[in-house]
Image 1 (cartoon, rainbow, N blue to C red):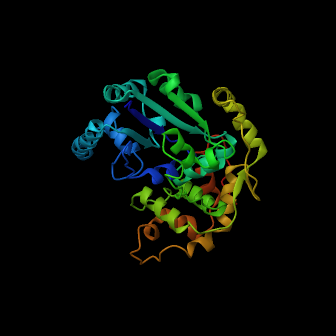
Image 2: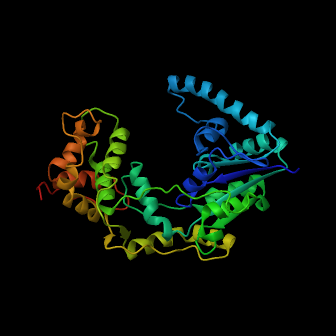
Image 3: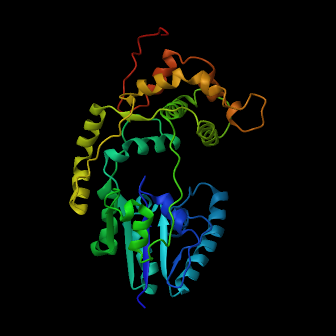
Length: 360
């Protein structure tokens, strides 16, 4: 029986989490979903095939990496000894590897498989702009600009290494997916019968108010000198704000047009591959962000309300309450100098008047 290795390179907001959750620990007579304890295989793939998966300056991490990599390779080797088709899915695969590393992936799998097929779902640029920026804010992003979606930069290297005929690009649009569902569509691509998988997982979406507060935290969180792990503080804040606020947000038409103009070459490239317009459209919402000041203004309006959700100063519930940057953010109105210090980091964005020493 011809054997195929399916490698799903999950892009942002294309049903990746749902696909991975539906396939986690799947194993039948013809196909197995790679078993690495977690449904997202991005980290095992990076650990196995990236030249520099960790910071070489961290000796402890380097020692642990060698140990973990040997475990990962043992699992990969075990899968290679199977006679079944193999499915790998990772959210970082599309951006983490250069051409030489992709060639290493091909050389590792090709001796045991008759075919290596790359599967990628893509969404129109503006359709995903809001959720893409929000996700980056959750990850610590402190710039007010629509994130780029480099379709060609991400996908073309896979075409060059694995062959254009082995790269399946599917537009993520409900009317084009099987049964309007990414899980059902993916199941069909890998040869599973209908209704074999069920779609359950969904990535939670933060409100406009919660996103604004996180953005402000990313900008102002390091203005205080209190110690602590800033990533842990941000994650704890995002968790506390999960049910906070009710509004959705969108971007201004002017901001969207400028972003589309910058992305035009990438948008046209992917459109030529899938045969539909990939510009997309922004979602409609009452809250419209046209600048960083709009985001910070919304954050300021909800600071006191949000503060009630956080642990008290003496609580042992986590690091959030003890972090000076967060207290600065939520306990008093942000002064003009503090705003301008943060706005200096924005690109594009307004620039402060250094000669103005007044507080507004």
